Amino acid sequence: MFNARDRVGASMSQNQKFTVKELSSSTWQDFEKLAIKQGGCWCIYYQRPKPVGKGLPTKEWKKINKKDKETLVRQDRSHAILVYDDKTPVGWCQYGTRDELPRIDAGRNYRKARPLIGAEKLWRITCFFVDRDYRGKGVSKVALHAALESIKSMGGGIVEAYPVVSRKMAAVPEWRWFGTPNMFRRERFKPVAPLGTSGLLMRRTILPS
Image 1 (cartoon, rainbow, N blue to C red):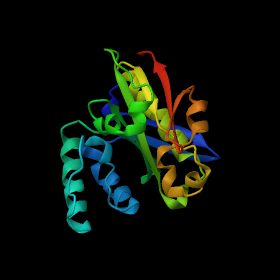
Image 2 (image 1 turned 90 degrees about the vertical axis):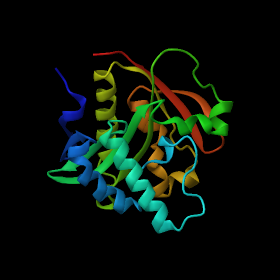
Image 3 (image 1 turned 60 degrees about the horizontal axis):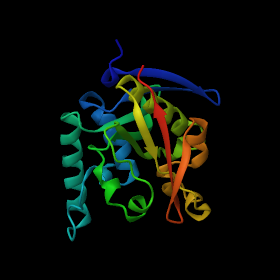
Image 4 (image 1 turned 120 degrees about the vertical axis):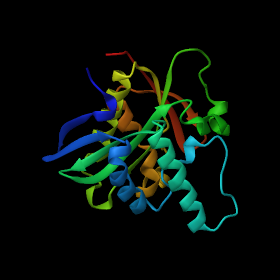
């Protein structure tokens, strides 16, 4: 039977072969390499209901982020797909349940949209990161597809995404960590409501495998 935490897959994109693995204790060091390249945010913002470390020096704030993220990973409370070129980690996609990524609920624009109220399981895809040398090679596409496959293997449910629609923001590579509407349309997501002037709430229902 498929074990999401041990998942290894492969995908072809623009003649480039990538493999994928789940974020876990065994892949933490690979994630660490990418997080440092990203600047040390550790992809933990959406995992906290409220801000942490306000007023602290940047160095101390990053230490707290790393420690908290590693703790969540070791407790199996942080999900992500890591993408590899051979043995080199080149990108990731973070996903998780509503309980794992509660910060979304605090967003003013999200509350104005159509948040789900009910018992159906809700998943969220919050961010992507791709190594500068691998941008434009389909890494995010591979990561997104693998994340959806993992969600399917874990029982499926409603999956939300929050891509950027602002052309000004999308033109800056660092702002593309939310993904783009076309990425999600290709995976059969449907627009639900705008998130202010820069974002879009999209959803797709995934049935269990």
